[in-house]
Length: 75
Image 1 (cartoon, rainbow, N blue to C red):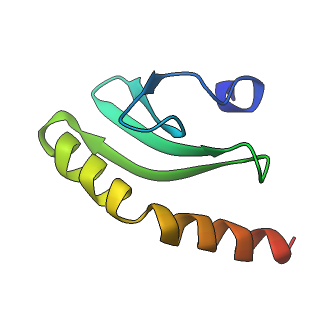
Image 2 (cartoon, helix red, strand yellow; image 1 turned 45 degrees about the vertical axis):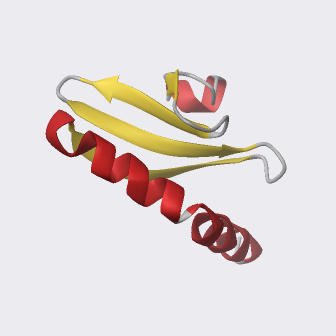
């Protein structure tokens, strides 16, 4: 997948590590964590829900990182 080769593909949103990749009519939202060497896909939405989805992701930045840290311990 393109994310594996270049995690910074797509558009940067309000924060450096928050990215959006448009595929057809959908948008895939993901977070790039350089310090954890990981990419976490957090949402998929259409144009209609775009801003609400972005706001939800931003409101939950801390929880996403905690989740990823815990998940990486299990590997």
